[in-house]
Image 1 (tube, helix red, strand yellow):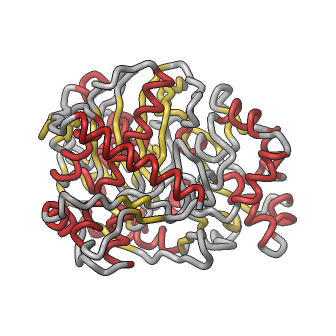
Image 2: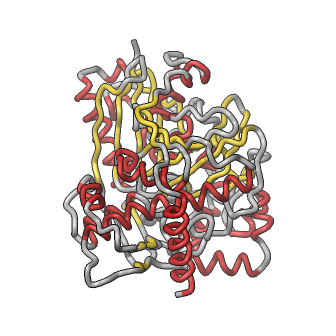
Image 3: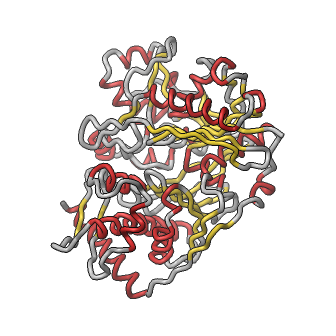
Length: 494
């Protein structure tokens, strides 16, 4: 019975999870790393932190599992998407901190490109919008702002990658510069229909194509981790961006199936099958997964701040010591207070796409306490999810009662999930295994290695832990969501 090592490199921590031959978790290790905020709206990571925490958690998980590295059949990788790394091909040294997906420093660049009339072409090609969220303008910024970077890139000395490419480069000792189709689809540089890097967009952003990695299926031969790193040579056989990996882990393989992941941000994906659906409501058209050379597409709505709003309660306001305390505070909140928090700390994502908007709180009174802030923080995630799902329903024509499969850290909160069901007026399904992102990466690698079942077999293993049904009265739901919409309008106006 083989094991699979899943690497889950996230925005605030790196994790490694060992799955057994039945896709059960055997061991896991997690390590947080420092977030850097050099300017308002800027977010960076030390690139080496991403690598060293990944390596140390892999070693720790293998040790905790009590197995030899040679017992592992394959490695699967899932990662924070859009985060941008540029490094020296000869030394493996980064030339700048990683610019994180949340970073908004290229807002002016995106506005200039929009004003010049380029967004329609970019959206048609990539399925994305001209927004600082994506990697392309971050890469252009590094080339424009690091001394000598552009000349070195044009000379073929520099490599660009999202975090998966950065980790694979180091795991393979620099042998492989590769990515998968789901990560490529988030760069703003990839033609999601032809499956090629877009020469037109690379020229528009002045990005040398020789910097870009080779694009593979989600289940493919990404290279071999060196024996001196983990104790044995281990094949890397599965890669997907975190939200796509969660879609796979939730077994959303049929068109119309819908999942939402609550981590640092919130990301809802709707499987649209082999057809890329162009959104009329400023959602993203993206690749859900690509197997055997065939892409399956999705509509995606991205919220920048979900679990991060709870981190703000802990680290910014310092009104809680740990995330689980939020639920108990929310339960004690005064029902007569309607405090609304718009957590636009790094701008608003879908369907607003307002990079300049910042966070705001409405409805404060002398009686507002930490309890009301906690409830408002959790409710903000439900409101933002409803924004996404209404846009998806308009684009796809789905009915409002489609069950939403949820995962991620915040989905463990019964209070938050009940409110989500209430404000959506739809069932919310929480699976037995919440580690769906890592499971998706593990399944990709394990089925490629021949130890896990095919799609149909894997889908049968999905198990429901709890279904939350709406209990809120329609009048209350409409009143609360109406207040949210007014608050968003006011925040944008400010």
